[in-house]
Length: 315
Image (cartoon, rainbow, N blue to C red; front, side, top):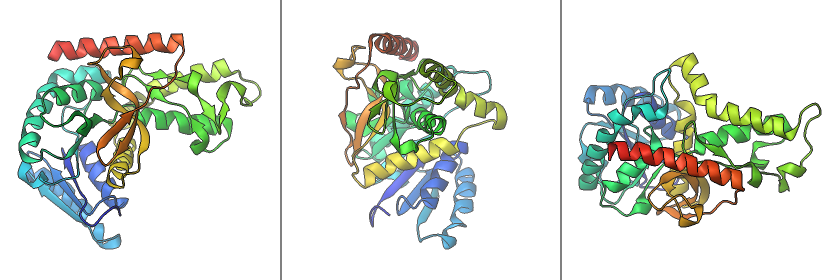
Protein backbone atom coordinates (compact mmCIF):
# COMPACT_ATOMS: atom_id res chain seq x y z
CA UNK A 1 0.00 0.00 0.00
CA UNK A 2 1.24 3.42 -0.94
CA UNK A 3 0.81 5.45 2.24
CA UNK A 4 -0.98 5.61 5.61
CA UNK A 5 -3.33 8.37 4.54
CA UNK A 6 -4.03 7.74 0.85
CA UNK A 7 -7.61 8.43 -0.18
CA UNK A 8 -9.13 7.95 -3.63
CA UNK A 9 -12.57 9.17 -4.65
CA UNK A 10 -14.58 7.52 -7.42
CA UNK A 11 -17.48 9.50 -8.90
CA UNK A 12 -20.15 7.27 -10.39
CA UNK A 13 -21.28 3.88 -9.09
CA UNK A 14 -22.13 2.36 -12.45
CA UNK A 15 -20.28 -0.52 -14.11
CA UNK A 16 -17.01 1.34 -14.54
CA UNK A 17 -17.06 3.22 -11.24
CA UNK A 18 -17.91 0.13 -9.20
CA UNK A 19 -15.22 -1.93 -10.94
CA UNK A 20 -12.66 0.85 -10.36
CA UNK A 21 -13.54 0.91 -6.65
CA UNK A 22 -13.38 -2.88 -6.45
CA UNK A 23 -10.01 -3.00 -8.22
CA UNK A 24 -8.59 -0.36 -5.88
CA UNK A 25 -9.61 -2.54 -2.93
CA UNK A 26 -8.50 -5.86 -4.41
CA UNK A 27 -5.11 -4.46 -5.42
CA UNK A 28 -4.80 -2.46 -2.16
CA UNK A 29 -3.87 0.76 -3.90
CA UNK A 30 -4.97 3.11 -1.12
CA UNK A 31 -6.26 3.21 2.45
CA UNK A 32 -9.71 4.70 1.78
CA UNK A 33 -12.02 4.66 -1.22
CA UNK A 34 -15.01 7.00 -1.37
CA UNK A 35 -17.61 5.80 -3.88
CA UNK A 36 -19.82 8.76 -4.80
CA UNK A 37 -23.12 8.63 -6.64
CA UNK A 38 -26.06 11.02 -6.73
CA UNK A 39 -28.23 8.06 -5.76
CA UNK A 40 -26.95 7.10 -2.32
CA UNK A 41 -28.57 3.66 -2.31
CA UNK A 42 -26.71 2.74 -5.49
CA UNK A 43 -23.38 3.79 -3.97
CA UNK A 44 -24.25 1.89 -0.78
CA UNK A 45 -25.11 -1.31 -2.63
CA UNK A 46 -21.86 -1.31 -4.59
CA UNK A 47 -19.72 -0.23 -1.62
CA UNK A 48 -21.23 -2.75 0.79
CA UNK A 49 -20.72 -5.56 -1.72
CA UNK A 50 -17.06 -4.57 -2.11
CA UNK A 51 -16.69 -4.12 1.66
CA UNK A 52 -17.63 -7.76 2.24
CA UNK A 53 -14.36 -8.78 0.57
CA UNK A 54 -12.17 -6.67 2.87
CA UNK A 55 -12.01 -9.22 5.76
CA UNK A 56 -10.34 -11.63 3.31
CA UNK A 57 -7.82 -9.02 2.13
CA UNK A 58 -6.27 -6.22 4.16
CA UNK A 59 -7.94 -3.59 6.31
CA UNK A 60 -9.22 -0.74 4.16
CA UNK A 61 -12.19 1.55 4.13
CA UNK A 62 -14.80 2.02 1.40
CA UNK A 63 -17.31 4.78 2.03
CA UNK A 64 -20.51 5.24 0.00
CA UNK A 65 -21.62 8.85 -0.37
CA UNK A 66 -23.83 11.29 -2.25
CA UNK A 67 -22.07 14.34 -0.77
CA UNK A 68 -19.16 15.99 -2.55
CA UNK A 69 -17.81 17.09 0.83
CA UNK A 70 -16.84 13.47 1.54
CA UNK A 71 -14.34 13.71 -1.34
CA UNK A 72 -12.38 16.48 0.40
CA UNK A 73 -8.69 15.71 0.92
CA UNK A 74 -8.71 12.94 -1.70
CA UNK A 75 -5.33 12.42 -3.32
CA UNK A 76 -7.01 11.41 -6.56
CA UNK A 77 -10.61 11.62 -7.76
CA UNK A 78 -11.63 9.34 -10.63
CA UNK A 79 -14.56 10.62 -12.71
CA UNK A 80 -16.61 7.87 -14.37
CA UNK A 81 -20.05 9.52 -14.52
CA UNK A 82 -22.05 9.84 -17.70
CA UNK A 83 -24.02 7.99 -20.32
CA UNK A 84 -22.25 4.84 -21.42
CA UNK A 85 -21.51 4.03 -25.06
CA UNK A 86 -24.12 1.75 -26.62
CA UNK A 87 -23.71 -0.81 -29.36
CA UNK A 88 -23.45 0.96 -32.71
CA UNK A 89 -22.28 4.23 -31.19
CA UNK A 90 -18.82 5.76 -31.21
CA UNK A 91 -17.46 7.27 -28.00
CA UNK A 92 -18.02 10.73 -29.49
CA UNK A 93 -21.74 9.98 -29.77
CA UNK A 94 -22.04 10.26 -25.98
CA UNK A 95 -20.64 13.81 -25.90
CA UNK A 96 -23.93 15.70 -25.98
CA UNK A 97 -25.11 13.95 -22.81
CA UNK A 98 -21.83 13.90 -20.94
CA UNK A 99 -20.43 17.39 -21.52
CA UNK A 100 -22.84 19.12 -19.12
CA UNK A 101 -22.32 16.39 -16.53
CA UNK A 102 -18.57 17.05 -16.56
CA UNK A 103 -19.07 20.82 -16.32
CA UNK A 104 -21.28 20.52 -13.25
CA UNK A 105 -19.03 17.86 -11.70
CA UNK A 106 -15.93 20.03 -12.03
CA UNK A 107 -17.75 22.96 -10.43
CA UNK A 108 -18.56 20.81 -7.40
CA UNK A 109 -15.06 19.36 -7.21
CA UNK A 110 -13.44 22.81 -7.33
CA UNK A 111 -15.59 23.70 -4.34
CA UNK A 112 -15.19 20.53 -2.30
CA UNK A 113 -11.77 19.14 -3.27
CA UNK A 114 -9.74 21.92 -4.96
CA UNK A 115 -6.33 20.31 -4.50
CA UNK A 116 -7.11 16.75 -5.67
CA UNK A 117 -5.76 15.29 -8.88
CA UNK A 118 -8.67 14.65 -11.25
CA UNK A 119 -8.57 11.61 -13.53
CA UNK A 120 -11.27 11.68 -16.21
CA UNK A 121 -12.42 8.25 -17.43
CA UNK A 122 -15.86 9.15 -18.84
CA UNK A 123 -16.10 9.06 -22.63
CA UNK A 124 -15.33 10.66 -25.00
CA UNK A 125 -12.40 11.02 -22.64
CA UNK A 126 -10.24 13.42 -24.66
CA UNK A 127 -12.99 15.97 -25.27
CA UNK A 128 -14.35 15.66 -21.73
CA UNK A 129 -10.86 16.18 -20.30
CA UNK A 130 -10.58 19.39 -22.32
CA UNK A 131 -13.97 20.48 -21.01
CA UNK A 132 -12.87 19.64 -17.45
CA UNK A 133 -9.71 21.74 -17.84
CA UNK A 134 -11.67 24.66 -19.28
CA UNK A 135 -14.20 24.55 -16.44
CA UNK A 136 -11.85 24.19 -13.49
CA UNK A 137 -9.79 26.66 -11.49
CA UNK A 138 -7.15 24.11 -10.50
CA UNK A 139 -3.72 23.87 -12.11
CA UNK A 140 -3.79 22.08 -15.47
CA UNK A 141 -1.30 19.41 -14.39
CA UNK A 142 -3.90 18.23 -11.87
CA UNK A 143 -6.40 17.20 -14.57
CA UNK A 144 -5.85 14.49 -17.16
CA UNK A 145 -7.76 11.66 -18.81
CA UNK A 146 -7.13 7.94 -19.15
CA UNK A 147 -6.36 8.60 -22.83
CA UNK A 148 -4.95 5.72 -24.85
CA UNK A 149 -3.42 3.83 -21.93
CA UNK A 150 -5.84 0.93 -22.38
CA UNK A 151 -5.39 0.90 -26.17
CA UNK A 152 -1.62 0.79 -25.70
CA UNK A 153 -1.89 -2.07 -23.18
CA UNK A 154 -4.11 -4.04 -25.55
CA UNK A 155 -1.66 -3.57 -28.40
CA UNK A 156 1.44 -4.46 -26.39
CA UNK A 157 -0.13 -7.63 -25.02
CA UNK A 158 -1.42 -8.93 -28.35
CA UNK A 159 1.74 -7.98 -30.25
CA UNK A 160 3.89 -9.64 -27.60
CA UNK A 161 1.92 -12.87 -27.99
CA UNK A 162 2.33 -12.71 -31.77
CA UNK A 163 6.09 -12.14 -31.54
CA UNK A 164 6.48 -14.59 -28.65
CA UNK A 165 8.05 -12.08 -26.24
CA UNK A 166 6.97 -10.74 -22.85
CA UNK A 167 4.71 -7.72 -23.09
CA UNK A 168 7.17 -5.81 -20.87
CA UNK A 169 9.61 -5.93 -23.78
CA UNK A 170 7.12 -4.49 -26.27
CA UNK A 171 7.54 -0.72 -26.49
CA UNK A 172 5.00 0.93 -28.76
CA UNK A 173 2.43 3.66 -28.16
CA UNK A 174 -1.10 4.32 -29.30
CA UNK A 175 -1.70 8.09 -29.35
CA UNK A 176 -4.40 10.54 -30.42
CA UNK A 177 -8.09 9.99 -29.82
CA UNK A 178 -9.23 7.17 -27.57
CA UNK A 179 -11.43 6.09 -30.44
CA UNK A 180 -11.61 5.45 -34.16
CA UNK A 181 -8.91 7.96 -35.19
CA UNK A 182 -6.23 6.70 -32.79
CA UNK A 183 -2.72 6.17 -34.19
CA UNK A 184 -0.19 3.44 -33.55
CA UNK A 185 3.27 4.99 -33.78
CA UNK A 186 4.90 2.05 -35.51
CA UNK A 187 7.97 4.07 -36.50
CA UNK A 188 8.94 4.35 -32.80
CA UNK A 189 8.20 0.72 -31.92
CA UNK A 190 10.94 -1.31 -30.25
CA UNK A 191 11.07 -4.89 -29.01
CA UNK A 192 13.57 -5.28 -26.19
CA UNK A 193 15.62 -2.34 -27.46
CA UNK A 194 15.55 -3.60 -31.07
CA UNK A 195 13.62 -1.58 -33.62
CA UNK A 196 10.51 -3.48 -34.72
CA UNK A 197 11.68 -3.16 -38.32
CA UNK A 198 14.80 -5.17 -37.36
CA UNK A 199 13.12 -7.72 -35.10
CA UNK A 200 12.65 -11.32 -36.38
CA UNK A 201 9.08 -11.67 -37.65
CA UNK A 202 7.29 -15.07 -37.52
CA UNK A 203 7.45 -17.02 -40.76
CA UNK A 204 4.54 -16.72 -43.14
CA UNK A 205 3.70 -13.12 -42.38
CA UNK A 206 5.19 -9.72 -43.17
CA UNK A 207 5.67 -6.77 -40.85
CA UNK A 208 3.18 -4.80 -42.94
CA UNK A 209 0.55 -7.51 -42.43
CA UNK A 210 1.15 -7.51 -38.68
CA UNK A 211 0.86 -3.72 -38.55
CA UNK A 212 -2.39 -3.74 -40.50
CA UNK A 213 -3.85 -6.57 -38.42
CA UNK A 214 -3.03 -5.01 -35.06
CA UNK A 215 -4.07 -1.51 -36.06
CA UNK A 216 -7.50 -2.95 -36.84
CA UNK A 217 -7.60 -5.13 -33.72
CA UNK A 218 -6.67 -2.28 -31.40
CA UNK A 219 -9.27 0.10 -32.80
CA UNK A 220 -12.07 -2.47 -32.73
CA UNK A 221 -11.27 -4.23 -29.45
CA UNK A 222 -13.58 -2.09 -27.30
CA UNK A 223 -16.54 -2.56 -29.65
CA UNK A 224 -15.84 -6.29 -29.87
CA UNK A 225 -16.16 -6.52 -26.09
CA UNK A 226 -19.23 -4.26 -26.10
CA UNK A 227 -20.97 -6.53 -28.61
CA UNK A 228 -20.42 -9.56 -26.39
CA UNK A 229 -21.07 -8.30 -22.85
CA UNK A 230 -22.68 -4.88 -23.19
CA UNK A 231 -19.96 -2.82 -21.52
CA UNK A 232 -16.24 -2.61 -20.88
CA UNK A 233 -14.99 -2.11 -17.33
CA UNK A 234 -12.28 -4.55 -16.21
CA UNK A 235 -9.52 -3.25 -18.46
CA UNK A 236 -10.14 0.42 -17.70
CA UNK A 237 -10.38 -0.26 -13.96
CA UNK A 238 -6.89 -1.77 -14.06
CA UNK A 239 -5.66 1.23 -16.03
CA UNK A 240 -7.02 3.52 -13.31
CA UNK A 241 -5.25 1.49 -10.61
CA UNK A 242 -1.92 1.83 -12.42
CA UNK A 243 -2.36 5.58 -12.83
CA UNK A 244 -3.39 5.97 -9.19
CA UNK A 245 -0.38 3.93 -8.12
CA UNK A 246 1.98 6.13 -10.13
CA UNK A 247 0.50 9.19 -8.41
CA UNK A 248 0.42 7.89 -4.84
CA UNK A 249 3.88 6.34 -5.03
CA UNK A 250 5.34 9.18 -7.11
CA UNK A 251 6.57 6.52 -9.53
CA UNK A 252 6.96 8.80 -12.55
CA UNK A 253 5.78 6.14 -14.97
CA UNK A 254 5.09 7.10 -18.57
CA UNK A 255 1.52 6.72 -19.81
CA UNK A 256 -0.24 8.08 -22.94
CA UNK A 257 -2.89 10.09 -21.09
CA UNK A 258 -5.31 12.75 -22.32
CA UNK A 259 -3.44 16.05 -22.05
CA UNK A 260 -3.10 19.35 -23.87
CA UNK A 261 -0.65 18.78 -26.71
CA UNK A 262 2.88 20.16 -26.57
CA UNK A 263 3.56 22.66 -29.37
CA UNK A 264 6.09 20.25 -30.89
CA UNK A 265 3.22 17.97 -31.93
CA UNK A 266 2.01 20.64 -34.34
CA UNK A 267 -1.70 20.20 -33.68
CA UNK A 268 -2.43 23.41 -31.82
CA UNK A 269 -2.02 24.37 -28.18
CA UNK A 270 -5.64 23.76 -27.14
CA UNK A 271 -6.13 20.19 -28.36
CA UNK A 272 -6.36 17.45 -25.71
CA UNK A 273 -5.56 13.91 -26.81
CA UNK A 274 -3.62 10.83 -25.75
CA UNK A 275 0.12 11.56 -25.56
CA UNK A 276 2.95 10.09 -23.43
CA UNK A 277 3.38 11.90 -20.11
CA UNK A 278 5.28 11.29 -16.89
CA UNK A 279 2.71 10.74 -14.13
CA UNK A 280 3.78 11.50 -10.56
CA UNK A 281 2.51 12.91 -7.27
CA UNK A 282 1.79 16.23 -8.99
CA UNK A 283 -0.26 14.63 -11.77
CA UNK A 284 1.30 15.34 -15.15
CA UNK A 285 4.92 16.10 -14.34
CA UNK A 286 6.07 16.41 -17.94
CA UNK A 287 4.85 15.63 -21.44
CA UNK A 288 7.20 13.81 -23.79
CA UNK A 289 7.43 14.30 -27.56
CA UNK A 290 7.27 10.97 -29.34
CA UNK A 291 9.15 10.75 -32.67
CA UNK A 292 6.82 10.02 -35.59
CA UNK A 293 7.05 9.89 -39.37
CA UNK A 294 5.19 12.04 -41.88
CA UNK A 295 2.25 9.64 -42.24
CA UNK A 296 1.84 9.38 -38.47
CA UNK A 297 1.96 13.16 -38.15
CA UNK A 298 -0.75 13.50 -40.78
CA UNK A 299 -2.95 10.99 -38.93
CA UNK A 300 -2.32 12.78 -35.64
CA UNK A 301 -3.40 16.08 -37.18
CA UNK A 302 -6.56 14.42 -38.52
CA UNK A 303 -7.32 12.96 -35.09
CA UNK A 304 -6.75 16.35 -33.45
CA UNK A 305 -9.02 18.06 -35.98
CA UNK A 306 -11.78 15.54 -35.30
CA UNK A 307 -11.52 16.09 -31.53
CA UNK A 308 -11.40 19.86 -31.94
CA UNK A 309 -14.56 19.81 -34.05
CA UNK A 310 -16.31 17.71 -31.40
CA UNK A 311 -15.22 20.08 -28.63
CA UNK A 312 -16.37 23.16 -30.51
CA UNK A 313 -19.79 21.57 -31.01
CA UNK A 314 -20.28 21.53 -27.23
CA UNK A 315 -18.10 24.47 -26.06
